[in-house]
Amino acid sequence: MSSAPPVSSPPGTALRRSLGVVDGVALAASSTAATTSIAIGMGTIATIVGLQAPALLLLAFLPVLGIATAYARLNRSEPNMGNGYVWVGRSLGPWPGFLTGWVTLVGSIIFCAYTSAIMGSVVLIFANKAGLHSVAGIALDPTSTGVTTAVGLVILVGLTVLAVTGIRAATRFQFALLVFEYAVLLAFCGWALITGDHAFSLSWFNPLEISSGKTFAQGMVLAVFFFWGWDAAFSVNEETRSPGEAARGGLIALFAMLGLFLFASVAFQREMSLAELVKNGPQALPYLGEKLASEPWATLPVVALMFSAVASVQATLIPTARGLFAMSRDRTMGPLWTRIHPRYGTPAAGTAVVMAIAAVIALLAVAIPKLSDMLLAAVNAIGLIVALYYGLTALACAVRFRAARHEGAREALLAVGVPAVSGLILLGLGGYLAYSYLTMSDHFALSPDNGWFMFSLPAAIVLAGLGMAAVAKYARHSPYFTTGRGTDADALTLPMDRTAV
Image 1 (cartoon, rainbow, N blue to C red):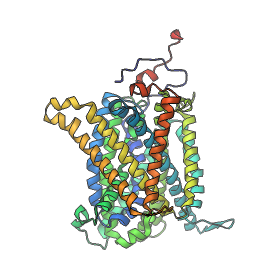
Image 2: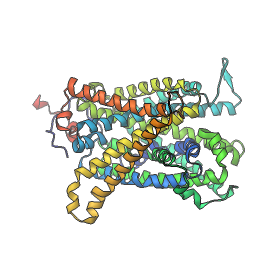
Image 3: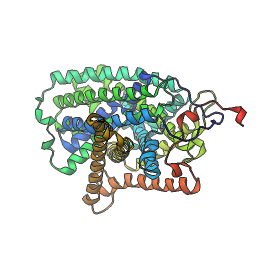
Image 4: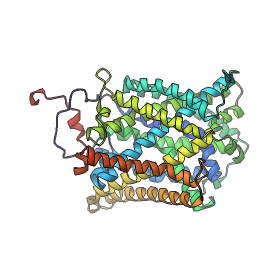
């Protein structure tokens, strides 16, 4: 645990410990959003690496698993809702620690923004199926960024209200959605696996068939993005009855995601040609439903996609507000984020502001008119910053537990070797991909095939993070930049000691 001196928490800053393993699994699995990743990701990854998606998903799982074990070990040592922000700050220094927290939060807010468009797209697909194709002269086009964003933002407001009114109710709601969407996903992918016209090939699992190093790096970062979200379970470790339950929830969800991703990738390629996957892009799952079944059954994958998008947005709002709470109590962010609703015991104001920022980003993304292009740009940007903060957190584990190298080969491997190698792999992939983006174009354009644009998004996020770190250090005089340590989680969840006032 951190050695920060115990302090009494001010009124209204105590979070409620009400969650268990099931809640952690629901939050991690919802945040990972297997159905959404499969629905929009299979076509996207096919445009990059062709039919080698199964190979990359399996390869990407290995460093992600190494990073998950690092999270679990760090969580046992210092359970804190700030997780990477706190752990990296203590082990590698406050500047990389703040940057870890910052890119995690910004990536999550961008995810909420573009997934709102996915939710809107699914609603418009339903409207089109019902024969409604325009309203007041506005075409209800599921591929239009503008229209889908407008519809999705209405849903985002409703999800924010649910996240504010109680985290346990929200996680139970997510669990119910997960049961339905996984049942639909397994049924349709299982049928595609059995009846597909395209012969299964072991070459799908051969990464050596990928054409170039740049393509491999871009595909690997995208595959890592598929798994992104399992660490959401660690963001509620101060609202979990036991910190170990957060780690178990995250790891259970991670292994479940691996099985689902491999199963779905093979099923999609059994049923669809590469040309079909690329053409349908983020609409690949609804297209699969139309190929395999007639109405009303063909609509079930669309319902599952909508449920997944809804659950993932809500599961992202919850940890994002908690991450900002952890940073705010260290005075690296403003006091708004530590306001706890007196009735619901949640960071209500912070959650509402996160929603508002996501809405603004979603509206700015309308500058990219085609939904598939906007999604590809967002996914690549998030993939790079996920590689950054996962890599830094894994290295923080290796540094913190470096003394374990004297405790035998097994402990040295698990505490130092695996986290260090996993972190370096992700940082190396991200660095190589960033260099590739810088050298692939000679001008800037708002397009996912323009390297300068693709590099500018994560670069702007990192530069903004360094600027915010400077504000926290020199304007707010945060003690975090003196000690590199986050506030002791236990100290902030104690009831107020009125005799000390």
